Length: 550
Image 1 (cartoon, one colour):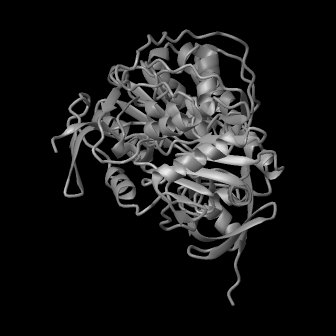
Image 2 (cartoon, one colour):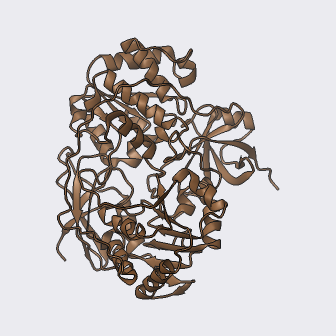
Image 3 (cartoon, rainbow, N blue to C red):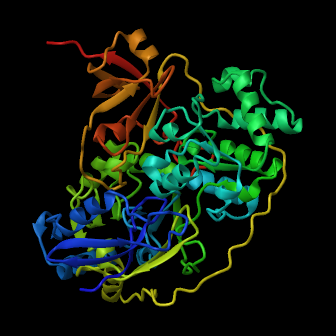
């Protein structure tokens, strides 16, 4: 076959565009020439894994564990939906496959009065809400604004892992720009920066307030910002001087908003960018559908994502309908999800078998991103891509339409000439802003989760799975040495990890790579951020106990 336009529809902020073809079962790609700000366009190393996972998964559609044709499974799903109008159905569509076509499932499920959509996501909703409150829109400037800055300050965004094209841009700009990286974890991106500041978790808003006090005489809302942030007064003053010296770009990472005060933190950084005249160089995220007109969907019922596990445990839902997600691996309270899928009637639609599908009653295998025509934008870059399928298979949109036909429901969605809309400019809405702090627990260890270089929300592989990284201080306090097995306990939820002692963290802080071990989300419970549309993953506190030999 000839090369066709394509893009990666997985949950990476970049959304790689490229040309692709499949010959003799192998994927061949040519990186997009549209990345004009890169000397050498590329696709990340995860793409081959995605292809192997979707093209050679060996998964098949089934009903009650028995292999069945796609047609039979769609018949059964339609029959189930039609006969369940007196039951409450939880509908959760994740980010295992993005793209405009996924609205087809939303259109289908919105036809039912008894379906509950999940409001929010584990990814970026807290920060998005902060940007909409502050600017009326959540959008990113053109990447060229980094070239116009003298200083680039990165708050908690490990671009090496979660935005490889941004990392390449930063690497290219390193000789001409002053790059500062601020993060409680010393990640790979810290090695790219000229200065690295290891801030205390969840204290970026305190730092922004202190910087504004230096720069604009704003009222300092804490007595001791140096103590709270873990930075010295000299370091805070250095940061203030770096901002004062010229145009500064601010890059906000997703990790900032995974605390109880996550929205407040983002709002303080937004205020810092505005007050210092750098609003045109403020980067966070944008919707992958930005610039595209979304279909009108009449959603009857919603539940906040931070409430879902509680409602599942209470038995509120009679049925669970999961699309393009593996919540047993990727969401907190994973044991509750696993039990609910096993105990309730469950439908899973995905590209391959997962921990969530293994106990489902109905599983419909779809072809995934390589079998779909679609259109989508990048979360970070102002790029829109379209693609044609390079594999044969049932696409998500066709599956939703086919089930709709069996129900007499029209799923009206076209991928030809998706209408565009004008995205308004950011206008800062000045208002009083309090300073909120994350939870405090001086007895236990704060647990932070990070994305791994091969991470995917719906991934099923477990590699180096059971590791937890702790600081030298915690290791000394608990009598733990590198390589010890330790019991990790969150209020009675216990799991065994292998301990790695590392200077990547300091103080009473530990971290693990999410999606690498099913016990990571088992020991995390669903606490809301300062919007219930987000989850405060990093407000988890643990006790550690060395496992005795024998």
